[in-house]
Amino acid sequence: MSISPCSPPGQHASSSPSPRPKKPPLIWDHFEALPSTAQQGKCKACRMNVSCKYNTGNFVRHLQLAHKDIYRQYQNKIGSQWTR
Ligand SMILES: [Zn+2]
Figure 1: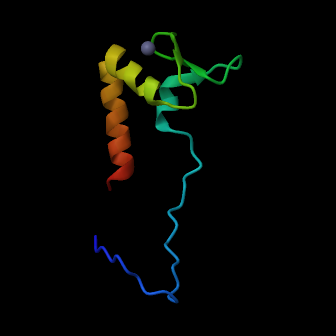
Figure 2 (figure 1 turned 135 degrees about the horizontal axis):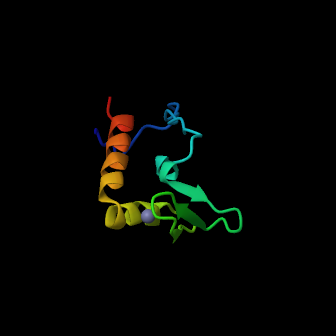
């Protein structure tokens, strides 16, 4: 919030590192990783192969377009994970 453009030197500049969860993204609950290629996942709902290329955004978009109910559940799950 507070912006300090000229922070005095000498003070310890240790910003608290945010812990990174090791769990895979929740979107993988709805997709299976294909053993043949790491850049595709198979939708569990319609068995369609969706390209991800190290980015799960396409998975989310597929749910959004093709499976609105599942997408809503996924959004709820994400929301309940981040907001307590
Ligand atoms: Zn699907």
